[in-house]
Image 1: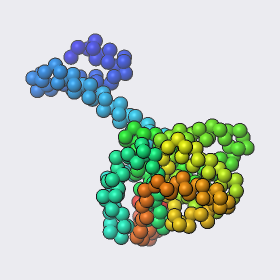
Image 2: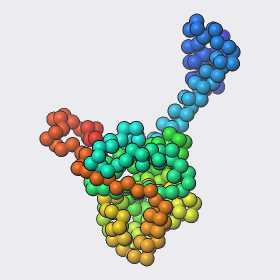
Image 3: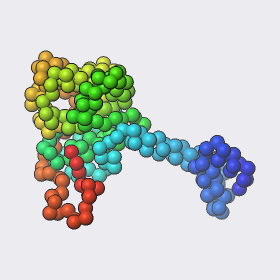
Amino acid sequence: MNYQTAEQLTAMKLNAMRVEYARQDELPASQALSFDDRLGMIVTAQFNARTKAKTNRLIRMAHLREPTACLENIDYDTSRKLKKSDVARLSDCQWVTNGNNLIITGATGVGKTYLLSAFGREACTRGLTVRCYRVPRLLTDMSIARGDGSYNKLMQDLVKPTLLLLDDFGMKQLDLGMTQDFLEVIEERYHRHKSVAISAQLPVKNWVSVFKDQTIADAVLDRIVRNAYRFDLKGPSRRPTIEHRPADAGDDNMATSE
């Protein structure tokens, strides 16, 4: 191995290339490969390392509620009424790049947050920017932002990601101010053809009751529902009961949260 070359790779922060270069030097079989083949392997190592780093950064910035959730680990038990073919159809995230929305409904504990996070993580692995919020917390933050002058900055943060995940929608009725703030977010993203994925316990037909102003409710729902894919999860709660949890189990033992 040419140590000057290795040091230059380190200086250029091409550490994965240096590691692969050293690995090849230690393997006699590598000497039988052509220059192009060896160079290709070295470049591929660096490319893969950077892709992984970018994906990890996007996942970290997304603030997913279930950051380890992934589509490959979804349980397709028949009681859930969740078809693998339906999930697979959306797994390429083309619906995100097309500006479509996603709605996930179901009773508490059935795995809405996990499925929402899994789609968010998949989008991150495909290089798309994602941001996740619980709707109650988001609306509180927006109310505070109006008072401290940071509203425009918060709106920019909400509009910028390619995919916005909104968890726990409809937990309580929104007052007029919250209704207007929610409309502002949906409206800005709608006109930029950017996707929103929402989870809620309430079935879509009851969403109008969440809003104080029915005119605004109609405007919001038209922008969300009209071009949305939907999953309506069924089955019993997937959260382990206290008596079935180990005595020393903490929150990390929760299988699926909402």
